[in-house]
Length: 110
Image 1 (cartoon, rainbow, N blue to C red):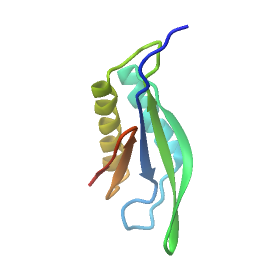
Image 2 (image 1 turned 135 degrees about the vertical axis):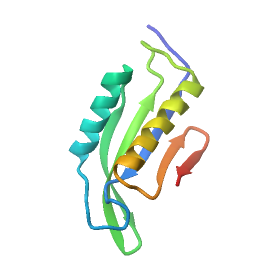
Image 3 (image 1 turned 180 degrees about the vertical axis):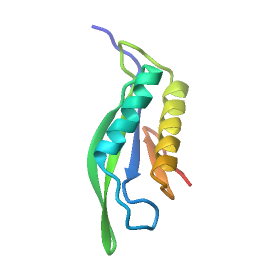
């Protein structure tokens, strides 16, 4: 058995491009992140979700990162990867905001 310090990050990404009617798909996110993890030898999870807010809703994705015991990382490395992935998705899908939830705080990239 191998254990490491628990370090997690969840990136919350909407799939509606800005304030337009263009909607991206979860498969587009999977393809983008497959390329990312292939290049960086990293691993993420992708979970489809729906954001429900006043007078609307939007499909989205939750991108998860953990400190995997087989290839342990520091808090700094997990945070750096989370912010890199969030910015990549924010730019690619023309999002106004993307949130990252850590164990002790949540940040929003604008």
